[in-house]
Image (cartoon, rainbow, N blue to C red; front, side, top):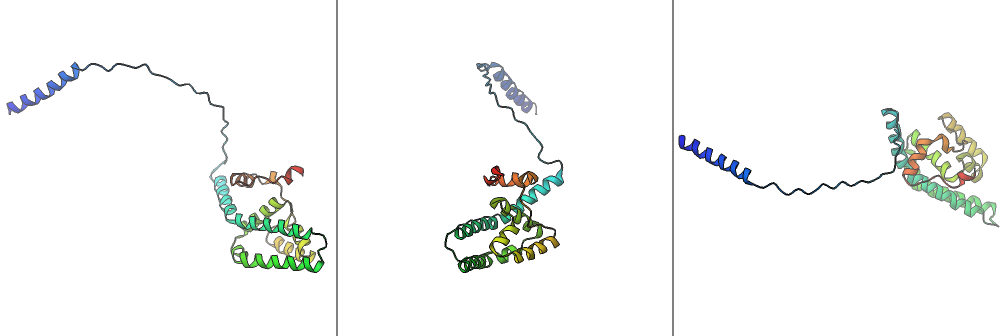
Length: 192
């Protein structure tokens, strides 16, 4: 037992001696880098969790309706180009519009009918944003005034207004979302 204690003492003592005999490492002077960063204003985007939830929900809905908005604006451009051709008869015009309407119905009717009301309102706003023309005016121009009135009546019963122009200053969150997704405000709004 005494031998074991002596052994432990020798081992720990030798470690202490070795630790004391070691030379301290040579010290290298510390180098401090100084980098000047530009000032950044940090602004809270949301006042509370409810605002943050609404923003994130709106972003999710925008991402869901974005393919339909892209298809609708592409169709709007295509129809406008075709209808601006000189010498287009009224029958050809009507036939072209009906053909395009049928194509859109077969491609998107089941998907768009599954959207909820909020997503539908966002889709209407985004189409108006991208084309700078409200849906009511499109229906009047491409179909006829009675069809436009029918859909405007339906929209009014459901709390929407198809005859309302898009105002970017009133849709701050929507503008932030669209900018973030890579869809800046169209140049036509700079003129208005």
